[in-house]
Image: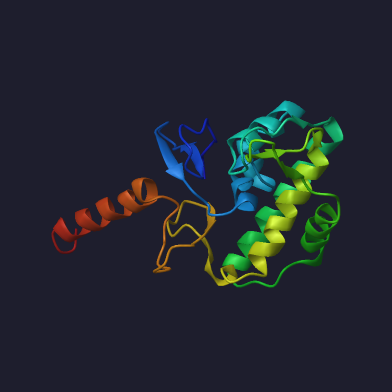
Length: 207
Protein backbone atom coordinates (compact mmCIF):
# COMPACT_ATOMS: atom_id res chain seq x y z
CA UNK A 1 0.00 0.00 0.00
CA UNK A 2 1.61 3.27 -1.09
CA UNK A 3 -1.47 5.44 -1.15
CA UNK A 4 -2.01 8.79 0.51
CA UNK A 5 -5.29 10.60 0.86
CA UNK A 6 -5.83 13.81 -1.07
CA UNK A 7 -8.80 16.09 -1.38
CA UNK A 8 -12.31 14.78 -2.06
CA UNK A 9 -13.34 16.25 -5.43
CA UNK A 10 -17.10 15.69 -5.18
CA UNK A 11 -19.86 14.67 -2.82
CA UNK A 12 -19.51 10.92 -3.30
CA UNK A 13 -18.43 8.96 -0.23
CA UNK A 14 -14.88 7.71 -0.24
CA UNK A 15 -11.36 9.01 -0.68
CA UNK A 16 -9.09 10.06 -3.51
CA UNK A 17 -5.80 8.18 -3.15
CA UNK A 18 -2.52 8.27 -5.04
CA UNK A 19 -0.91 5.14 -6.50
CA UNK A 20 2.83 4.37 -6.53
CA UNK A 21 3.03 6.28 -9.80
CA UNK A 22 1.22 9.30 -8.39
CA UNK A 23 -1.99 8.62 -10.30
CA UNK A 24 -5.18 9.52 -8.39
CA UNK A 25 -7.97 7.00 -8.06
CA UNK A 26 -11.19 6.70 -6.09
CA UNK A 27 -11.36 4.35 -3.10
CA UNK A 28 -14.59 3.90 -1.15
CA UNK A 29 -13.99 1.64 1.86
CA UNK A 30 -17.73 1.62 2.58
CA UNK A 31 -17.71 2.88 6.18
CA UNK A 32 -16.50 5.87 8.15
CA UNK A 33 -14.27 3.80 10.42
CA UNK A 34 -12.50 2.24 7.43
CA UNK A 35 -11.85 5.67 5.92
CA UNK A 36 -9.47 6.32 8.79
CA UNK A 37 -7.19 3.40 7.92
CA UNK A 38 -5.40 4.82 4.83
CA UNK A 39 -4.06 7.73 6.92
CA UNK A 40 -1.16 5.55 8.09
CA UNK A 41 -0.86 2.46 10.23
CA UNK A 42 1.24 0.34 12.56
CA UNK A 43 4.71 -0.99 11.82
CA UNK A 44 5.75 -0.72 8.18
CA UNK A 45 2.61 1.28 7.37
CA UNK A 46 3.82 4.17 9.52
CA UNK A 47 5.65 5.52 6.46
CA UNK A 48 2.25 6.51 5.03
CA UNK A 49 1.36 8.61 8.06
CA UNK A 50 -0.59 11.79 7.28
CA UNK A 51 -1.83 12.62 10.79
CA UNK A 52 1.20 14.62 11.90
CA UNK A 53 -0.50 17.44 13.80
CA UNK A 54 -3.96 18.11 15.25
CA UNK A 55 -5.10 20.08 12.21
CA UNK A 56 -4.53 16.99 10.04
CA UNK A 57 -7.24 15.08 11.89
CA UNK A 58 -9.66 17.95 11.32
CA UNK A 59 -8.78 17.91 7.62
CA UNK A 60 -9.42 14.17 7.47
CA UNK A 61 -12.82 14.62 9.13
CA UNK A 62 -13.72 17.24 6.54
CA UNK A 63 -12.87 14.85 3.72
CA UNK A 64 -14.64 11.87 5.28
CA UNK A 65 -18.24 10.78 4.75
CA UNK A 66 -19.35 12.82 7.74
CA UNK A 67 -21.74 15.63 6.83
CA UNK A 68 -20.21 19.00 5.99
CA UNK A 69 -20.01 21.84 8.48
CA UNK A 70 -18.24 20.09 11.34
CA UNK A 71 -16.36 22.76 13.32
CA UNK A 72 -13.80 20.55 15.01
CA UNK A 73 -11.17 21.36 17.63
CA UNK A 74 -8.41 18.78 18.12
CA UNK A 75 -5.57 18.86 20.63
CA UNK A 76 -2.29 16.94 20.70
CA UNK A 77 -3.58 14.26 23.07
CA UNK A 78 -6.61 13.61 20.85
CA UNK A 79 -4.33 13.31 17.82
CA UNK A 80 -2.25 10.68 19.60
CA UNK A 81 -5.41 8.79 20.56
CA UNK A 82 -6.59 9.01 16.95
CA UNK A 83 -3.43 7.27 15.77
CA UNK A 84 -3.81 4.65 18.51
CA UNK A 85 -7.42 3.99 17.48
CA UNK A 86 -6.48 3.92 13.80
CA UNK A 87 -3.71 1.39 14.36
CA UNK A 88 -5.93 -0.85 16.49
CA UNK A 89 -8.71 -0.67 13.90
CA UNK A 90 -6.22 -1.43 11.13
CA UNK A 91 -5.02 -4.63 12.78
CA UNK A 92 -8.49 -5.61 13.99
CA UNK A 93 -9.94 -5.18 10.49
CA UNK A 94 -7.12 -7.12 8.85
CA UNK A 95 -7.55 -9.96 11.34
CA UNK A 96 -11.28 -10.01 10.70
CA UNK A 97 -10.84 -9.98 6.92
CA UNK A 98 -8.55 -13.01 7.13
CA UNK A 99 -10.70 -14.96 9.58
CA UNK A 100 -8.42 -14.50 12.57
CA UNK A 101 -9.94 -13.97 16.04
CA UNK A 102 -9.88 -10.42 17.42
CA UNK A 103 -7.14 -9.52 19.85
CA UNK A 104 -8.38 -8.20 23.21
CA UNK A 105 -6.04 -5.21 23.16
CA UNK A 106 -7.59 -3.98 19.91
CA UNK A 107 -11.11 -4.40 21.23
CA UNK A 108 -10.15 -2.48 24.38
CA UNK A 109 -8.99 0.52 22.31
CA UNK A 110 -12.17 0.57 20.19
CA UNK A 111 -14.48 0.13 23.18
CA UNK A 112 -12.70 2.81 25.21
CA UNK A 113 -13.07 5.33 22.37
CA UNK A 114 -16.73 4.39 21.86
CA UNK A 115 -17.48 4.95 25.56
CA UNK A 116 -16.89 8.69 25.18
CA UNK A 117 -19.71 11.05 24.05
CA UNK A 118 -20.03 11.09 20.23
CA UNK A 119 -20.54 13.98 17.82
CA UNK A 120 -23.95 15.61 18.17
CA UNK A 121 -26.14 16.69 15.26
CA UNK A 122 -29.20 18.95 15.38
CA UNK A 123 -32.00 20.34 13.22
CA UNK A 124 -31.67 23.95 12.13
CA UNK A 125 -34.68 26.31 11.93
CA UNK A 126 -34.70 25.91 8.14
CA UNK A 127 -35.06 22.14 8.49
CA UNK A 128 -31.48 21.28 7.56
CA UNK A 129 -29.16 19.05 9.55
CA UNK A 130 -26.11 20.57 11.22
CA UNK A 131 -23.51 19.73 13.82
CA UNK A 132 -23.78 21.08 17.33
CA UNK A 133 -21.02 23.65 17.98
CA UNK A 134 -17.92 22.83 19.96
CA UNK A 135 -17.11 19.42 18.46
CA UNK A 136 -13.94 17.84 19.84
CA UNK A 137 -11.49 15.24 18.65
CA UNK A 138 -12.69 12.94 21.43
CA UNK A 139 -16.25 13.11 20.10
CA UNK A 140 -14.97 12.40 16.58
CA UNK A 141 -13.08 9.31 17.75
CA UNK A 142 -16.13 8.09 19.64
CA UNK A 143 -18.22 8.41 16.49
CA UNK A 144 -15.60 6.50 14.48
CA UNK A 145 -15.37 3.75 17.12
CA UNK A 146 -19.16 3.41 17.34
CA UNK A 147 -19.28 3.13 13.56
CA UNK A 148 -16.76 0.29 13.80
CA UNK A 149 -18.86 -1.50 16.41
CA UNK A 150 -21.94 -1.16 14.21
CA UNK A 151 -20.01 -2.46 11.21
CA UNK A 152 -18.34 -5.45 12.86
CA UNK A 153 -21.52 -6.56 14.62
CA UNK A 154 -23.86 -5.77 11.73
CA UNK A 155 -25.17 -7.51 8.60
CA UNK A 156 -22.12 -6.68 6.48
CA UNK A 157 -19.50 -7.97 8.91
CA UNK A 158 -18.89 -11.02 6.74
CA UNK A 159 -18.14 -8.74 3.78
CA UNK A 160 -15.16 -6.94 5.30
CA UNK A 161 -12.25 -7.74 2.99
CA UNK A 162 -8.72 -6.90 1.97
CA UNK A 163 -8.10 -5.94 -1.65
CA UNK A 164 -7.46 -9.02 -3.79
CA UNK A 165 -4.22 -7.66 -5.25
CA UNK A 166 -1.13 -9.32 -3.79
CA UNK A 167 0.59 -5.98 -3.18
CA UNK A 168 -2.36 -3.98 -1.81
CA UNK A 169 -3.46 -3.93 1.82
CA UNK A 170 -6.44 -1.60 1.57
CA UNK A 171 -9.44 -2.80 3.56
CA UNK A 172 -13.10 -2.27 2.70
CA UNK A 173 -16.62 -3.53 3.31
CA UNK A 174 -18.57 -4.67 0.27
CA UNK A 175 -22.04 -3.15 0.53
CA UNK A 176 -22.97 -3.85 -3.09
CA UNK A 177 -26.05 -5.94 -3.83
CA UNK A 178 -24.13 -8.80 -5.53
CA UNK A 179 -21.48 -8.90 -2.79
CA UNK A 180 -18.68 -9.81 -5.21
CA UNK A 181 -16.30 -6.87 -4.79
CA UNK A 182 -12.66 -7.98 -4.89
CA UNK A 183 -10.63 -4.83 -5.41
CA UNK A 184 -9.98 -1.61 -3.54
CA UNK A 185 -10.96 0.15 -6.77
CA UNK A 186 -11.77 -1.21 -10.20
CA UNK A 187 -9.87 1.68 -11.79
CA UNK A 188 -6.74 0.78 -9.83
CA UNK A 189 -6.07 -2.81 -8.71
CA UNK A 190 -9.00 -4.18 -10.74
CA UNK A 191 -7.64 -2.80 -14.00
CA UNK A 192 -4.10 -3.92 -13.19
CA UNK A 193 -5.41 -7.45 -12.63
CA UNK A 194 -7.24 -7.34 -15.97
CA UNK A 195 -4.06 -6.23 -17.74
CA UNK A 196 -2.02 -9.00 -16.14
CA UNK A 197 -4.64 -11.61 -17.05
CA UNK A 198 -4.77 -10.34 -20.64
CA UNK A 199 -0.99 -10.50 -20.99
CA UNK A 200 -0.92 -13.99 -19.51
CA UNK A 201 -3.50 -15.20 -22.04
CA UNK A 202 -1.53 -13.72 -24.93
CA UNK A 203 1.85 -15.00 -23.79
CA UNK A 204 3.24 -18.05 -25.65
CA UNK A 205 3.02 -21.33 -23.77
CA UNK A 206 5.89 -21.70 -21.40
CA UNK A 207 6.88 -18.01 -21.67
